[in-house]
Image (tube, rainbow, N blue to C red; front, top):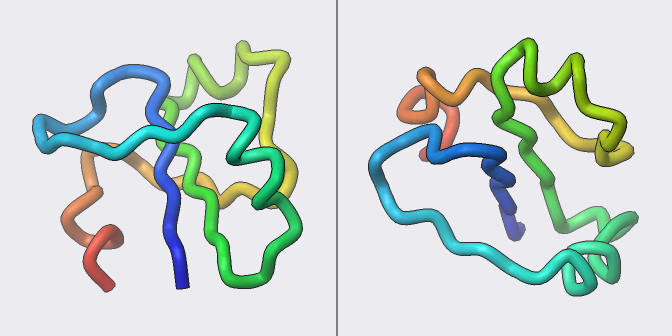
Length: 68
């Protein structure tokens, strides 16, 4: 299963792999892909752009959910 984390800002000090948005769009709808949106509350709420089906997680708690 692939997991893709999207970071609006650097949420954790660890290096995060990035992919082009076109590659992400091609993956949408794939049941083997999990998209995690870790934008902080106000950034997420104020954004006009949301990824359908993305799971929201708190970036400060990455160690509790990233390695499950």
